[in-house]
Length: 247
Image (cartoon, rainbow, N blue to C red):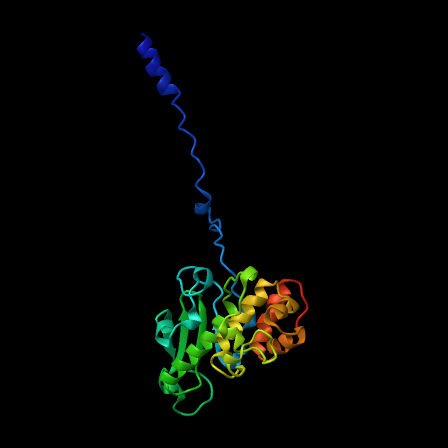
């Protein structure tokens, strides 16, 4: 009798299923966890369109490798072949004026640096080989402008790349460094990167950077203003710290 009553009760009042838990947040389209990376200057500091260079800000600098300080790859210290090995290369037909043969071959070159996401291109030459070399040179400049490497101010010693671009009046610049390297020299990019690294470390303060470089504030300002791309990158960095731009 008791078993019959139990069967009747179950058939009339079925057990409620266990409540279903809501799916995890990432199934609902929530943003993935943030990945913190060291500063990479945004594309607003890029050279003008005449330099035919752009940047993809969706990627940040790689945190792997041992070439640079603090475990960072020293991209500018790599040979052309090593740097090209980190790039995806694409070719396309350049548009616009330039002669009857310009658009007949895919001679324009676009390079995307995989570790940083930075893109540089060259379109002005009919030779794909020449455009590849130009794009690689522009890539080095963009890396110098946008990829910051951490430095320790407590025991800071300017690298030789930075010493080479300093004016001769610098009190820490030895005679063995040679003549000052200007913006038109291919070796200016590593020095420019080192200067921006220092400027970032001192919160954008030109006066503090000048003390560490054995120069006056005015001399460091003139060095920054000697190159339009360097000036734009430095001013963007200073703006992020709430400082006035250099003019």
